[in-house]
Image (cartoon, rainbow, N blue to C red):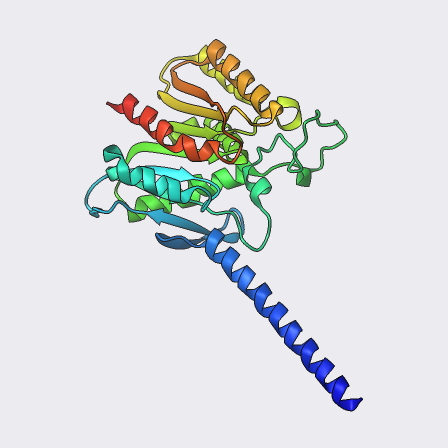
Length: 292
């Protein structure tokens, strides 16, 4: 009986040890997959966000410190990074471009906090926001994340690399709404914006409403405006709400876009996850065609 109990304890110990090893292996795999890259990984402490943030910096294969380079900044870090690398390697025009990807925090879920505009709820909802739901912590903090990019990340990059004025901001889904938010609040930071499958439906299309206000104001002012480029895409097989918001964005751009060169496409047969993979090359081709 004592021997049996000892064997049972041994088996339990072995099983628990195996479970711990498997759990550790899963964490290591996820960390490697989502929070490291094959490029130059840099950690920057952000006083704005009060936390350390990683960035993945992809330099051209023929990188020369004295040469001036274009810049692409993209959200959702490692998502779709392989496709970006592949497309940029193939396109001659992108041999003079530095790609900087900002991964989401690994240990805590901060994606909605960072990418959802401050006029929409982090717990994204299709219905209008009740006036009673106005506690500050309910809203996205894209304004703080944008300040991090503007006042901390861009100065860091400008101090380490010789950059020109050709700059792109790219995002997907919630990152697409962040792109529209950035374009409408600090349009001068970038001269081109890529929004793949933008989540513009938050709180009964409030992202579309706010973006249209920017378009209307820009149209009214008209003078001394920096020309902007905007590329929008959505998958034809995405959720009807995503497609509805996309169509509404197109209508607002058709009516009110001023000094904005924009292009949109619905990629038939593609889903919310496959559309951004497909969209990298068309977006870059569109942008490069405008610079020629």
